[in-house]
Amino acid sequence: MERFAEPSSQMMGPKFAALMNGSVTDKVTPDMAHLIQDYWHQFPPMDPMWNKILAAYLLTIGILAWIGNGTVIYIFGTTKSLRTPANLLVINLAVSDFGMMVLNTPMMGTNLYFETWIWGPMMCDVYAGLGSAFGCSSIWSMCMVALDRYNVIVKGMAGQPMTIKLAIFKIIFVWAMASIWTFAPVFGWSRYIPEGNLTSCGIDYLERDWNPRSYLILYTIFVYYIPLFLICYSYWFIIAAVSAHEKAMREQAKKMNVKSLRSSEDAEKSAEGKLAKVALVTISLWFMAWTPYQVINTLGLFKYEGLTPLNTIWGACFAKSATVYNPIVYATSHPKYRIALKEKCPCCVCGNVDDGKSSDATSQATEGESKA
Image (cartoon, rainbow, N blue to C red; front, side, top):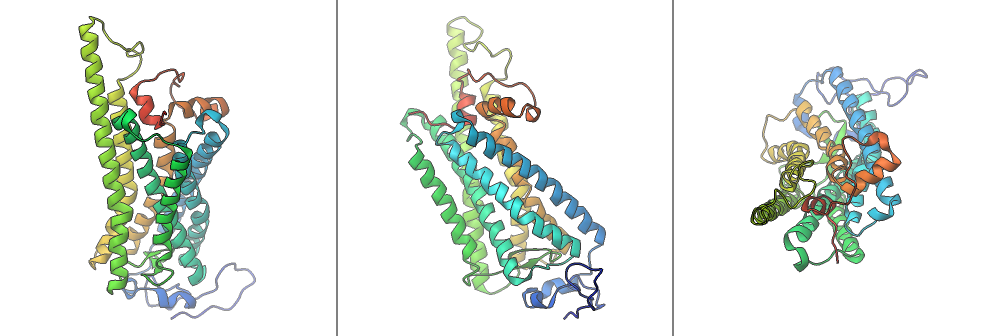
């Protein structure tokens, strides 16, 4: 399918000369040819400018994710007051996001430069496997954080207190779930192949056999719909509980003929409003990051002909943007984290920083800490 060009001492990377058939698969190296779906042969080569734009986007979110998640890991790991059982889930989330961008960004960036996959079949499995493992871990870590906040705020004293053992058990569950879906294609249930403009690898969502189709259906259920349902379920009742709490406080203040039972209410927004914003941003950004890629996989499952190299590769890149959102939503909304961040890295703090003395429902919501 391809013939390699004569070696040149002035060239670096793979040496190939495309057959002039006007396809996006022109630059595929011989060792990768057997993994390319026939579907992609119908598309002409992408404009090289798109590869530059994608590389710039990937580099930008990569740097932001490295800095953001690296800072979260450093602050939570070096601040004694933040080393609580519940915050182990936040650290696990940051480790997942950090790992994805550190390990996957350089490989994909190199492929975008050469406009095809250059690392060979084994590294295709490694790249896709790492993306699947860290992505699954990230999503389920978000789910565990949401369930922990639900346990603290909605169930209150009736809920099971978070302990180190329970937190570790949840983290083990998260990585066990990630491992199952990551290694299944390696052992024959579906497979990892180049996708889109062939600069990244992912699950085979174009094959019509029931082996890959069954994997993709169950993968979508367990790594998208179930976490999404649990996150929405948790925040729905969290908002309802805080709303009821705020209403009760207003009624009590009215009975006592005082303006408010909160000394800081004039300076701060209501806990209900703050929590609603955190929940809305959390779920919205989760949707924004992962839904396009999930839709692409689903369309491929049903053999939709509208998939193109450009829209599929953008879906894969956009899913990685969740690694940038998560540190902002899950860490910077944490009052004690913001205090520690101001002390150790004041240039990273935006807006006013609470003194940490407040004990309202919002603090419980954003910290997600269980109190025995």
